[in-house]
Length: 241
Image (cartoon, rainbow, N blue to C red; front, side):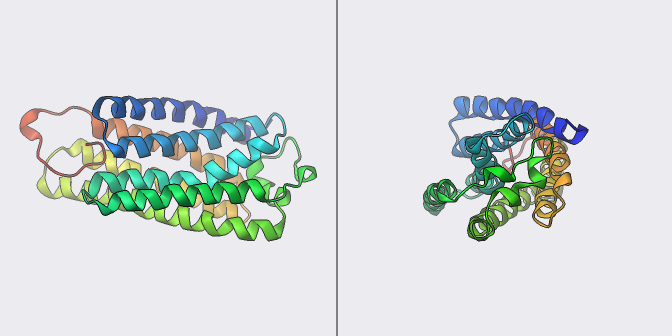
């Protein structure tokens, strides 16, 4: 096993702690943005766990989990959480319904495509050989939801985090939330860049990007959520309200 293949072990452990932390906040506040963030982060963690498993053995089901949760669904679910936080309008529920329906359709699509088991080679990171496992015609088909979910999720997450950081910076309050949101945005951009490089054939960067994203996003979330003196608090939208 190469050093690169060890990185998902670390990412999985970080995302497990991150996911538990977010769901604990949801259990207290019952806010929908925590629920969607938690589900999206759990998907991210499942994708990392699948990389760990596929570094040790082959499983068609685990491969489907890796691509479905790691490559397709998780960005949009995390982004939907940010949309719930920043936009308090009824139409956001409609968007959530569309997301759920689109996720079900994408799941059915992923489950229906043929898988070339012989394309898998133990010892090679799955990010460097997945195109040999998915037939080219099928890959062209699942690339559509991959791009849509990824683009929408990235815009919502990065845009929402930077917007929140700007609001706090402009009002000169809660500097921890300015820093935290910037870290979240950088983390999201790191994994998005690594994913794009993977699609271009440079899969060796994916695990590094995932680890950087897991660290920065979790640390950013903890930084933004850190309690501050009450006199500094103002009713401004934030990524961890």
